[in-house]
Length: 158
Image (cartoon, rainbow, N blue to C red; front, side, top):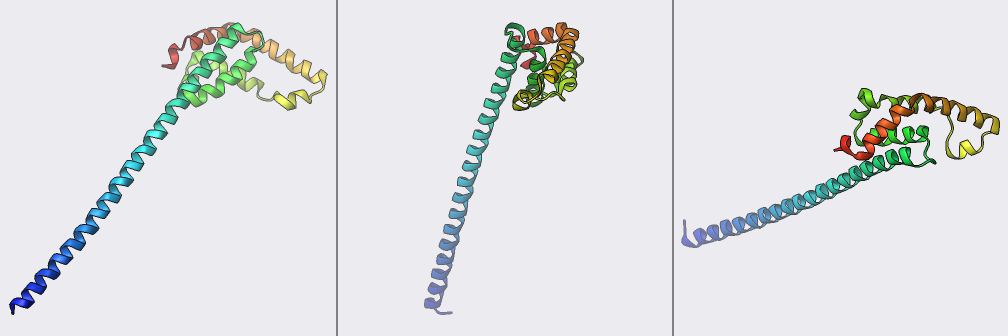
């Protein structure tokens, strides 16, 4: 083999090595950028999740406090709101016997229309539903107030 051919082959090999090195470097750079982007997305998702978690916790405490201290918040409305919030925050709380009353009041009043549908009801039907809610609230007032005190303190939410 001539030295010229040897030098040409060496040059070609060096060119192939340089090309492959550039390709490998570019792939590693892309992988690193994708990993950094994925980490940023995960961090943003975790921050959003923590923010939502805190929002739900604060909302639960506010609703529980309103049950205890705001005459505008009825026990029925409070139980309906708490059920939805707790289902999204920590559903296993609703499985505890002490919190079963929230689910019970929610379920027993789920047939009652709300918002615009409530406004559209005839007065006689509204009074009937209001009587039904009052009776249910009288039965469960102590249990709901106890749960509201506990939730408003935030202790079961940690």
